[in-house]
Amino acid sequence: MASDHLGDRVKRLRRLADLTQEGLAEKSGVSVDVVRKLEQLRKHSARLPTLHALAKGLGVELTALLGDPPAVPSTGDADPPGLVAVRRAIMPPLFTPLPVADGVEKLSIPLLRGEIAEAWTLYHAADFGRVMETLPAIIADARLAAAVGRGEDRLAGNHALGKALQLGGHLAIRLGKTDLGLSSLERAIAAADSAEDPLLGAMICNSVAWAYQRQNRLGDAQTLAIHAADGVESEHSSKAEGLKVWGGLIMSAATSTARSGDYDGASEMMLTAEQATRRLSKLPTSADGRMVSVFNSSSVRIERVRLAVQFARPEEALGLAKGIRLSNDTPVSWRTWLLLDVARAYADMGDAAGAVATLEKLQRVAPGWMRHHTLAVAIVSDLWAGPARPPGLRRLARSLGLAD
Image (cartoon, rainbow, N blue to C red; front, side, top):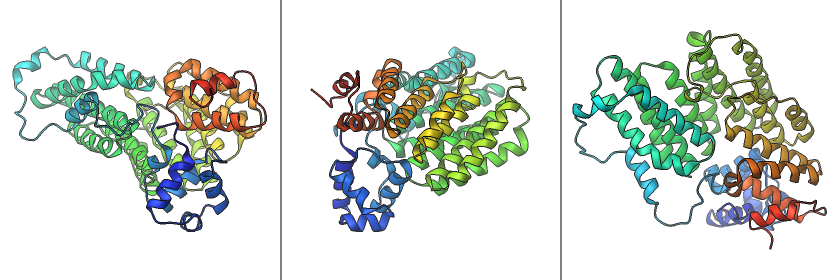
């Protein structure tokens, strides 16, 4: 669970790997002092490049160190019925009868697209429970439209199926089911191919790259994102939708580059992406933004703040954050990430009051999201263990189960 200390996870996985602290330090390239401080609970968090290195040394996925993602905490019990329904929708049972054409007349492609777009809105608002409730029926309807439609309707049905399965992949990954997520995304790419929409396939490649990052497959993630971006740039970057997809892929490649230890290379890629947003503002767009990659001047700057925080550059992160003007189409999930990174930057600067004020704002924006996020818990834990306890910290600590 999110309250499980990172050091406890490191110690448990190190022992399972039959490694000493010194052995883990040697295999991961992380100093033995960091390993000791984590396991002795004197250090509550670590930067993502460090976590990737530890995961590689331990031979586990990154998610094994991160704990539960910001969604539903695991209990060790069997999958709940809602997750079983999502799993069944993504991977229908063998020998299931093919859909019949009778029901397709009741399907409205525009209505189906609207339902998918609304489900993506719920996902970005971290309302994963409602997504889990509605997604199985959406996938079933999209699969029916893709199977029995004719001509343009069949293409549109496959496009809807691709977006629905892409969302299924994201949801599964947020629930800690990375392999199920990749299975859903592979099916989504197949649907995108049948929809004859290269931009949809490229968007889904971005999702696959994110899944690879969570599995500590940084080289695979970087290669995939750059390959997909090159394909989009050569054919589709003259239109707003194509430029958004290309920009999202460049940001993904930059993230993998940074986590591999090349911060300067990642910064160059992010600056290239930020320059492209100026061209984006001059291009007309007609697509529903919820169905296209999140790429605008706000999202690029948010990602730059995140990378600066992860590489121990809090002053740079706070400077970048001050210049952000959030656009109306910036999802709630991106806003929450920005607040979390700003709180981390304040904490790294020794400004406990600034960190607490930012975390209080985050809790107002997304209280459920904060409770289950390991980094939020780690920041509050660090502040609670520190010498200064500004007003509001005790209430935050209590809400996260860190104080009486």
